[in-house]
Amino acid sequence: MNTAPAETIKPIAPPRLEIRNLHRFFDGRPVVDDVSLQIRAGQVTCLLGPSGCGKSTTLRMIAGVEMQDSGEIYVDGKLICDTIFRVPPERREIGLMFQDFALFPHLSVADNVAFGLKGSKEEKRQRVAELLQKVSLTRFIDEFPHQLSGGEQQRVALARALAPRPRIMLMDEPFSGLDNRLRDGIRDETLTLLKEEDAAVLLVTHEPEEAMRMADEIALMRRGKIVQQGAPYNVYTRPVDRAAVAFFSDVNVVQAQVNGALAQTPFGEFLAPGIPDGTDVEIIFRPQHVRIDFDRAGKGPLPTPTDGVAARGTVQRARYLGHESLVEFRMDHDGSVVKVTVPKVFLPEIDRVMWLTLPRNRCYVFPLERAAGA
Figure 1 (cartoon, rainbow, N blue to C red):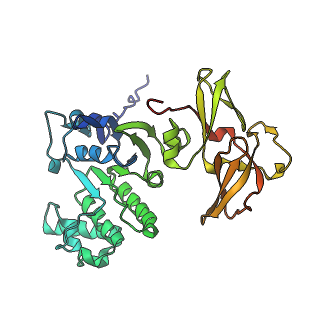
Figure 2: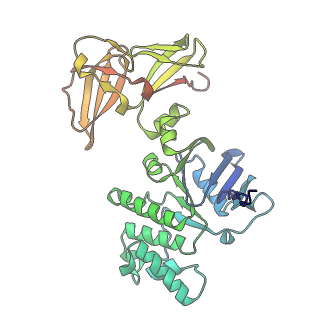
Figure 3: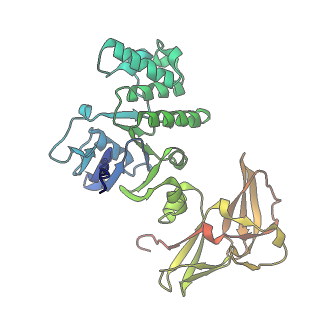
């Protein structure tokens, strides 16, 4: 007889932060429109989108400094706010970091980090020392904010926000005021420390590079709605529409019409499954994915299985950007300009004729979005 104990199944912990169907209206206009998110402990989610899309308003509602018109907010599965019940901001165990750091100028670095900490004097001192060591600011413990650089102030603000061990960290464009030379290093240091503290992090940014660098998950926001959500690789490589492609990089566009699930272009045919015949479409492709066919120069267009047909263009401009070169071509077929980026230095002469091809697996086909009233 088998007397082995039955295997116990551990229950799945609820998300550290969950927001359900948040709405916020200003003057009758939806600023946050049915936004839902889940973030687990130790996870960094970036709310990414242009200015005015509702990112910061969402953050303020989670923090409790602004009330939603409808929707619910949960922490570790417990309701902390709806339109009737509301836990005060100071009791939500949420840390906040903003663009301006908001340090107290009359307090030392140590006193800034200790501000809001509870416990004995010795416990506070130990926590301050621990965090200042992690952000490499121990030697500045008795200095004041005006004696620090912008990067050092940012690290003090991070230490202060983490000092009470918040379960959730909300960050609103925290790196935008930093010098470009310092930004990447401080982002990496911040990410390491946030992971060590095991907080659920919601980072608001309008910079795609920052979101790709820091996030475990990106929620792409536009006009108050989350239009796409997923791992950075998936959001970048499987965009939902033209605007999603263009938000991450420059794009080139070729227009065509669908016939028999195919769109015929000067670059060859593109599959357009599920799009009705007669529909005008746009083929979207990024500059780094265009191939310059040096072997075919002067030989005319020939089809290939993966790249379609080569189209002829004339160099209009070429610039070296430091880590790559940007070349602009005037295309023979319609006079449009196609931008191409090439690794390292590539500066062809103006008016040089070259052939361009498009890898099929790097292009996106979307129905043409017409302006209202068009």
